[in-house]
Image (cartoon, rainbow, N blue to C red; front, side, top):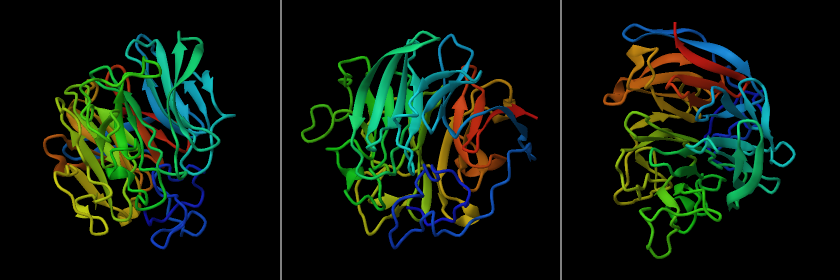
Length: 383
């Protein structure tokens, strides 16, 4: 896990994102880490060339970690790590608080609505630490007809991934971390025989689900056909560009590098992003591999309190013209948020700060939101 300084008062999730594994000689643990100065709370930020942003608090939740919107519904839906799915109006839609595991990086971790709006999907870990992707029928008032779409045993309590999103193709994409501990001891990232360390692509409306015939490992002996991409450590958040269909993956690093991986629209899948042969662009413990896909963004751990990559969205809204076509991302511990033109990612510039940034969200209109594990939900606006 990342050898970073942790804020002593962080909630139990602490590093949901990859910094709270069992102790090993190469990492600090929450009980022994040296506290770091907390990040600056969200405020208006200014960049000389790009204008100003305001992070306006519009609600408060209990450790919010994921965000979703539903077709034909003006409400925002927020997943709280202790187990509740709530609306921006404060209503509880689903309550798993009596079923979820609450240690380390576990709990309710992801939410997505079917493109039709008729079903809602949650990614969560049960009392045994097993991951569930569960479906409910939803009419806008009640969630009924609960069923598990997919379950996965987890060898350790950390690196559960948790992101759910429907792609432009209408299929459900699911993120799984490498199973946890430190350094991928079971080699899951490169093992095509396990779902761990992967992004999956399925049709959830099956019994219990269907595998698309054009998935890259269909017909490949020894490979799980659900796999869409592999070689990932803990892809806590990934997003699709609503304008192009490109996929952006934030993969939380081990000891040295945080990274963003990229898959262009039109890809046939099967990309290998390198873990645990590589961390960032550099070999990990002497690992070597062929045809590894390089990250498009990599930044060092520890510097300035960096600890965990939070991938955001390419902005496609209308209220902030200067932000058009820029990819937003941030760091959980350091608190900064940056925006980078998608064709000039090296020109990333800080555009705001959110203390304990846990996730981003995208509204139906393309406008963006930021979530803080401390509780606030922010709408990102022009200042």
